[in-house]
Length: 169
Image (cartoon, rainbow, N blue to C red):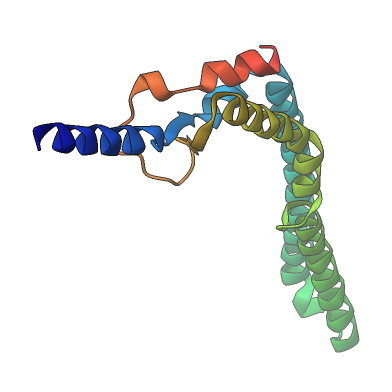
């Protein structure tokens, strides 16, 4: 009887152990910060953003100057002249807002440029993660830099450096 219980216990242990799933995690922020192309892309995006922001601020400064001039001269202007000036101010303000939307809207120029510069790097990381998962038979690889809350992680399961190695960094 003991032999049968031992054999059943042993077989159950092997079955559970054989089906154990392997997990790992990576830190994409860490990986991205180790990739020079990402730093270059980020610098380009920051420069563009700064340039565009200055352009927009200049437009709004023009609107503000037009409005202040209008307020000072308002008493001297006829009604048609007032209307014309107000329309010019509103038109200039709309132009500034449209430019701001063009550059910084969710699907604006900055987003498109980010897709153009950063997405290929992210795709390389994704492909390296897939390769790591396939080669090492990982069931799941988590990203510790995402919104996923990881209360505890064993640093032995961090495969970020392995991903960098697969990417050639």
